Length: 179
Image (cartoon, rainbow, N blue to C red; front, side, top):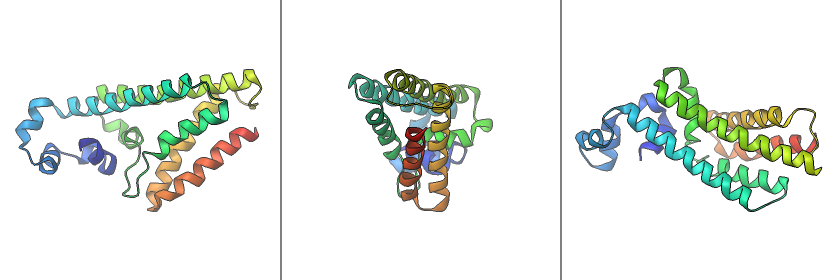
């Protein structure tokens, strides 16, 4: 519930009373589990990042060719773009980054670094196997793809039409494959 609220409104616009009201409990119950709002935010981002790590490990374990690995990766993004305007938790938090507590900033940065490292490793393997050739290094290509996907979510959300995410993401993958 708290994650959905943050995905819709941003961390700074969500209060304990918003959460307790939605859950039908008292604020004290939320404070009991998360004494400070920072504790709640860190827990949300950590859980979100750990789910991503599990997803990425599962993709890697399947031994798929690079195009299929990238499709499986894209699926994780597709699943967090909702018609109600919710998008990736860490994309939302990146917008609030300068106003987040340092502990949350670290977790958000780690989420993006996990993405970037996994993509760079996958792209490097793709280059070594001849599945993909790029003009940039795997690290640069990974950072560009990640930035593009994050931006595609924001554009889709800002337009009020989250269905725009899919064609934007497809263009990014096509550009990477064409390089």
